Image 1 (tube, rainbow, N blue to C red):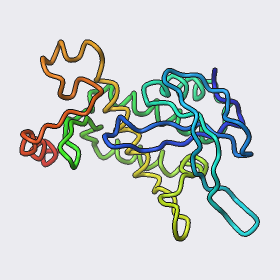
Image 2 (spheres, rainbow, N blue to C red):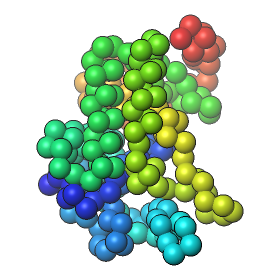
Image 3 (cartoon, helix red, strand yellow):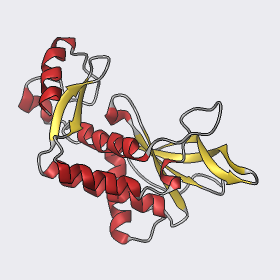
Amino acid sequence: MPPSPHCNTLFLTGVPARTGRVAFWSADGSGPPAVAGERATVEDITVVLPDGSGVGAVRVPAVLLPVRAALPVLTRAWAAGDGHRSTLFWGAAAVHALHLLARGLLLPGLTADDHDAWRVGPLAGEDLEAVRGLAAAMPPEAHATPLDDTGPVRLPESERLLRAFLDAVADTLPRSPAAPLVTGTPGYAVPEPQHLPGLRDWAADVAAGH
């Protein structure tokens, strides 16, 4: 079921990137929206909403989908063009990610703690400009989760959050049931994090080259 026009959408980052999730929530704080998808869960999340004195952090119920399950929901909403502006934004981001991957812009690497991770790249100048242009169009509801629960309210920086989503898509789609059979190894092929400290120098060389 596609999100309703009153259903807001945002992306919650994860480490590794593929563990990020897409959250669908209602600004009025009512029950979680009717969004169906594989491995959907309902959880309370913290979002920033306008209040009488400016903005404040509140808890709202949300439907959370892993990236793989969220992609068809987002792309269908984008194609229909009748969802909330935050849903349409993340739908456009999903379509953009798929276009980048279709061009083969996919690089292997390691997380800070030496787990396997794919990312989008290498990006040429025009690709970077396209990402920045899309990030500039990110509506407030699309990155309305605060960076922390203490101190002044701070929201995720739009371009960094968009890049995290693109990397999450890149880190998700190559991992299929058949991938380990093709590669002969679980690294970069299975969803479960693989600890590969022996590839640190190689990953650094890949990053340096791109």
